Image (cartoon, rainbow, N blue to C red):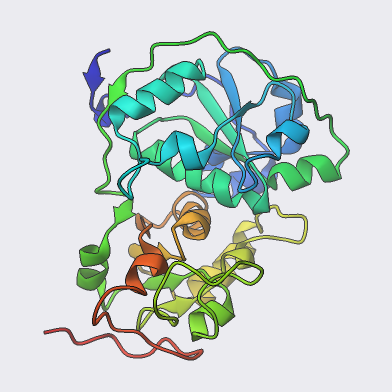
Length: 313
């Protein structure tokens, strides 16, 4: 397979029309979302690939949206030895197995208000796939409306997806990037209890993954769920501006880093900040608290206030 740079595909014309709903037209990139109505009307359309990405990796087998293929973020997207994502050859292998072509439109959806679908979206963008969209409201929205589910699993014809060099620089932050970012906006999207240091991981999950609790000093607490309405869809533009531009004081800022525990919840916020609000540079620190909370001598703040910007020697 030919090895190509993501930049080669920057000017691809979207092969399938966007969802032109009034709500989406308010956002910076209206092409990044589709509604359940749009998806139902476009199911099975040539060039449209529907992928389900869940935290509960067994959920797909219990019933999924017709034509949807399963992508397992544990085994399909993660390197099985190093804590990292698959390389270009691995990505090519996964997409070729799923029958995906470089020019295809991919619609992602999943459980947990699209936590893992947004995570998968972010990884796809590290490889520069141009046309990727999220189903607004995810699996919960689709099922709550009584729309069709099936247990029939599609059998895609294998494709020859090119080997693309993964580009981490623009969308991914590492520990040293966070340190050099001090003084600019950091967003902690975890629960208030995790942020304050009362627990190490999300409520309802076992305490694991980090040696210490708390948050990165100067980071603002904006739980990922503040971006969503009760039906799991995203708030309209005015609602998001109230949460992030005003509440988190991101108005006028063009460089933001978001983090959580391992990068899944912060991918959701990354999507909101970049595609819905249009902040120019947004990076996801996927090492997140599982890395920072175990670093020797890393500065940590406790309580509900951000704390001062660390002064590192």
